Length: 428
Image (cartoon, rainbow, N blue to C red; front, side):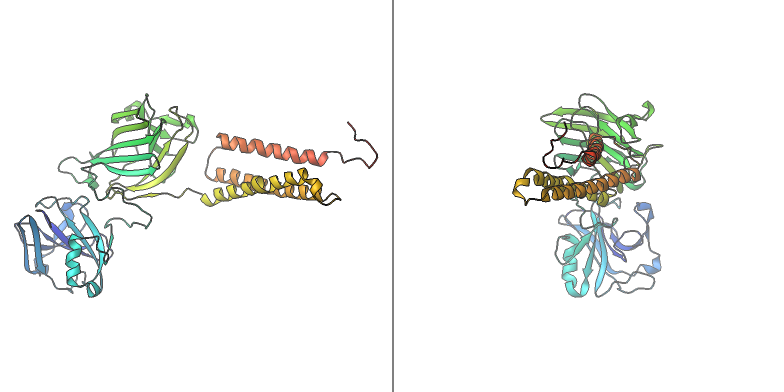
């Protein structure tokens, strides 16, 4: 290792830290075997003396490097076996020679000792980008779609970035008091910044299930307040500031400058009666308006963010398939069948005589109405399923108005008097 620090190589059955076994070396002492009982240093325990079977074990700090060496039996009773084929390993190192929390200086990887050979295994400890080795996080199962915006930074030292969407950036840093570990910290705080390209209110929400109702948020309004809110519903009157005694943010501000809205605040991660912000996975919500006034959001989404690794993944919207069906059906109704029905009437002289245009016109309008009813029903049923208020925003109210007008138009067509026989004048 380039530098002076404690080093570790661990042997795992599932690629996760807890329950694994490790050889840990601290400069100035002898490398020994440990049981990894948890994330806190207090539960990293030496194996009993009879299991300390390493030979030729040493760790030295020379010429700016820390070098650990040992020989280990691959198969030992009651311990994880090291196979000649595929193995799950973990590596970690500290920031100095005292055994303490490793921060982001760790990862899990798979290594085939038969295919890669000892030289590649030795290279893997210092070069996790080697293509022969699959690297993954040791404390979270990370799907392929998850990104790591932190770029391997320690988010307890530097600000880590997470792009929420184009033109909307989240930056955060966790503040850990001296002598505490992030996983068990009661006094930890988080510094957070939201940077939006434009002038609008911005918000970051904290959720237990990835949904808005029942969640909490910090909302910043340029030139006004940056406060904690309870999200009790989808309408403006149900988004209410928390009581004054819960307004515990510090260094909170929201300003518009150089074409950007920037909200900053520091929040206690664990507060009584509120959603706790964890050092691991969290369900967050983001939203922003189209103007500084706090009204219905212009854009929003839910996402999972691991504050330890910086790995983020957008949550799939609930009932996405139903809303997609709603959009496709109404596009077919109003974007395909209605225009063709209108053209059949306008271009009737180009069609064969005998009323064929009317049959086409009526048939296409009938199909479009049936689709409109189906799409409208899907919208109403899905809104009820999601426990949202009906017709609570301009889009929904416009849809209701169009539905009523379409029904009245069809009724008008049905009760409209037929054309009189040839030779008779139409009644006024």
